[in-house]
Length: 123
Image 1: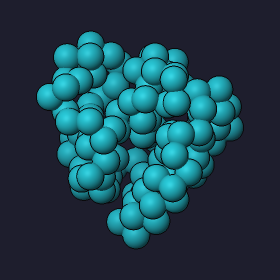
Image 2: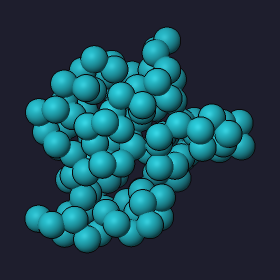
Image 3: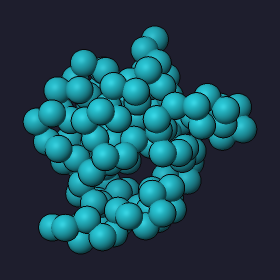
Image 4: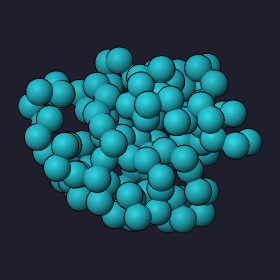
């Protein structure tokens, strides 16, 4: 019943904090990546249920990466320190399932975006 998650962010500090927070919430963080290329490799290797992708990956576009990851991962969610309103149209036009502000990141926020599908994944 646990959700397998890949975290993609250029901040190692955020990756560590998010992993700790999500694992405490019962999410299995199967891997982390700091670049788009690394994220695509990890997605192929680890077969996560969901990928959380930072909007801005040190010059790389998280939205562009979301398009590539959506072919390999059942669900992609954009995360950012920016407000949802600033990027709502871009996220809606992308294959990402939704957006979660980094400040409210939690297992519940992820499940809310996924419509609770994440809770029914087989173990």
